[in-house]
Length: 518
Image (cartoon, one colour):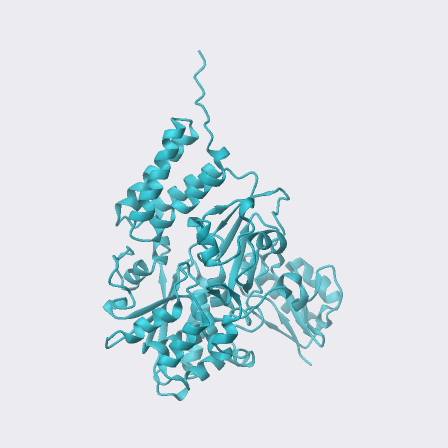
């Protein structure tokens, strides 16, 4: 029987030598005359084990990692094609603690299948949600998504069903589904992992959104820094089109839906939905004033759904398993699962999908294993470069939209970046202002000017120049930016700055200027 060996094609694995490992494995297969094939799968999300090589055995898939090309000959010598023991053997993949503790719904196939195999996708329950959606009316689909409690996974946490209903009810000869895949937050990679590891689930989610709202055209907007994701999505779209999943009659239903990929130039502000729409239209990526909302006047002035990758990729399982099944996970108003991306100075970095409700301390210390350096955790930034810094004193905070908001934080795209005790929080606050100044589209004064003044003020504090006065000024700048900016770039920059000042006051202590020697 042909042995199947899995070598990931995910960008993180490629950066760590996965292509070289695949080449070495192919050479060993030929040299030994073995009946074996290589499948380039997505990533399981355990970054510290990449490249993670798996082999299918009678007992299940056995994992080996991290594998280097120089390890391959010894793996074959140890009989790894039959699940043989080796220093890199991790046992059955599903039993690795980091994976075993997860609840994988959105990422159920990621790392399991050949991303571009429709047969694999169908075998692992793919298209079940779409098939059910095709048997429902548009209002029924919207109601199912509303009842599931799904909220936007891109940052704001807005209820997905309400956004869909607004577009469905809006008049217009043409409506659009736009997938926001402009994943620009530091320490985030969930969108990329889906696009590279399970592209058909995103396509399926976009089609269902189209059926629900009457949209017949979709655009996936991502950043040019994601070449592998762009290539994989383009190939998957062609395959889906060839199989009649996309096109003038979705699965022979008579309902039309087609889509295409558009790549942006990497401006952070284009992650904001109105800037994204301007860029998609070929205009400069600057923020639009709201109202009108994109749901009413979005792409080309037509009603448009703008959803994040993870929001859309979560829709197929909701339609397949039902709203009640999905809603049963989570806590409070945060329902379902969330792919938490653990990064920074952490021992076990990667993607961990789980129901809402774990505490921040559990995520960082139990799942992430604490810092990679072995020093104490000082701060954890949740929600990208505009997220608040949480100290250890707030580690009992549940991972929940409202719980984080109550502590002046935000979940955002669920990126968790860990810092040890060597971090200088004044420098981190300055970085937030500098980041905003660089990435600002320039349209509104609070963001454009406030961030520049913020950098200058942070520098004065660092130099010991009237520290109390300048700390008060920095807080005032943050207040102006928070309530006066047109979009979340300027509006959220105060979160990291104010949290650093509030929770780590010692890092903002005066450092007197050194007087010149006489």
